[in-house]
Length: 419
Image 1 (spheres, rainbow, N blue to C red):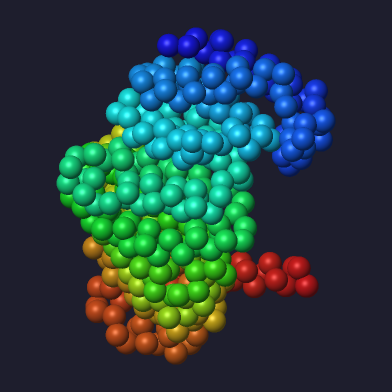
Image 2: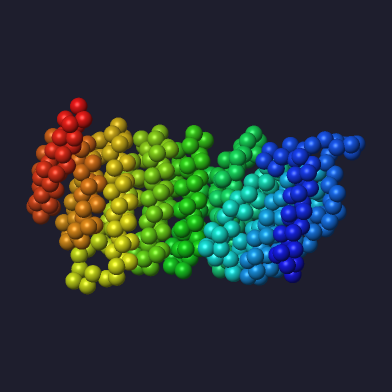
């Protein structure tokens, strides 16, 4: 194995040569030399080519050697900056991308390791995308799709899925233009469909939640955020609600529970903020997904004689804050949600009537639902009082009285003071 210190030294030498030749690492603008083809010739070019070949051969076999892995990825990133077309012979870019995919699928790679490598991985993938041809990018997307095949779960290869979701998130952080951008977004509907099938299979095995389900939710949120104005087919956006309805929220470890809860919240928030045209037709699906979070946090937030651990309560409070925040976001979309506001309130009081909540949890939920009550007109209140069952109606009356006393009066006072 090549020592990581040696890799760092060669990387520094290469960076120094690039600097001396006044090559801008940022925009890849080479300085003209006296060579016949106008390309820069580095003094130790053969060393770098040979070294790169060694790195690619040894990278995947570097089991649990984190320092070497990090320094090797850094070398490859700098090597991509060399403005010499000959460096990319023998499918250099695809070789690097394939090696990355294999490394990220290795069993010793964990989520924390991926997070600690995020900066160098992002820089490397950005260089690969910036230097690749259309055909090479097409091959990169095919490699990702192979990793997202549901058969990887059947074959008990979940790390293949994690590898591809990681690479997809890295690609989303890269600026793409022209035909490459078209290829990317042309592939996205196929990717979303694959994610639905993957989630369905992964949700049957709790051990797969941190490896597959959580990264999928993170990737979907990033995908929808980047796809603002690009994903024009509403079906491709609403398909993500299928994933949110499949993801389990019961019988989870608290760490996994919060990750899932946050992931669902972020996807819903992204649809709400970046795909308003979709929301006009997809509000029932949106509310079905959101109400899963409401029901779950009410269940978790019940006041018990055995209060459980402090960490459990802290997680539940963080989830209650997310629900409060979502109620607030929904209330800002008055055009879309005004008609649905009494039904949102009705769902909340029906769920609340069955339990006694921890006061801190209840406080967050009440602060959120007050914003939905702001959307309700007088007829909505009459409708709720007339249609709710006896016990639920009492819960609603108490909520509405608190709303009038603590929220509406306060807001009116604030407005008067501001005026």
